[in-house]
Image 1 (cartoon, rainbow, N blue to C red):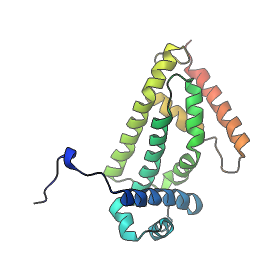
Image 2 (tube, rainbow, N blue to C red; image 1 turned 135 degrees about the vertical axis):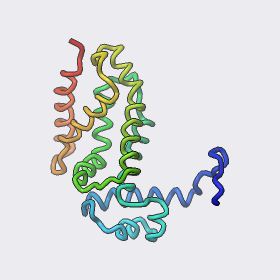
Image 3 (cartoon, rainbow, N blue to C red; image 1 turned 90 degrees about the vertical axis):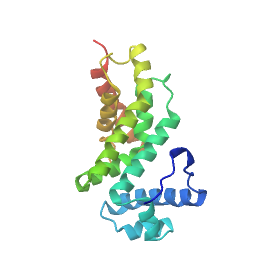
Image 4 (cartoon, rainbow, N blue to C red; image 1 turned 180 degrees about the vertical axis):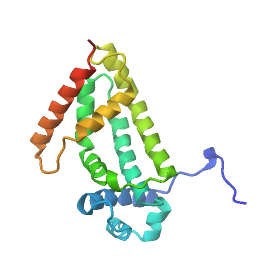
Length: 193
């Protein structure tokens, strides 16, 4: 019988192991962008400078890699969010900053064959985003930016809708204009009446 250490006794991953994991996530993002969801996993491992065994020690399949890419974007949002800023500005920055991950997800969504564990991971990520955004949503409601009935889940959905306007052939200025226009339209519907 395998001995499982209590959570407080588990060690954090070694720095080199964490660096290899991050290299795999970055490589997967680049490979999915360039070659699509069905890019060989060996290609992802090779571009990360690791072997296939290292890839599978970190990620059980390509869906787990997608979840890791999206989770890294959630980490970025969690570190940068300032609830005192207007919610539309928070979301604009988030959507524009997560442009590559969003376009990857849109591109590969039809090919995802999520098993129960990965589906649960995607659902947990959605709940995590809602939790990250909750203080900003409450602050926006207090400032009268959005209706009191708007939930953090609504805001995550709004961000997903706005990310759909970021097309790969648009310039940075065009993306900024498109995202601003999308949020202007979406927030008109979220404002108190």
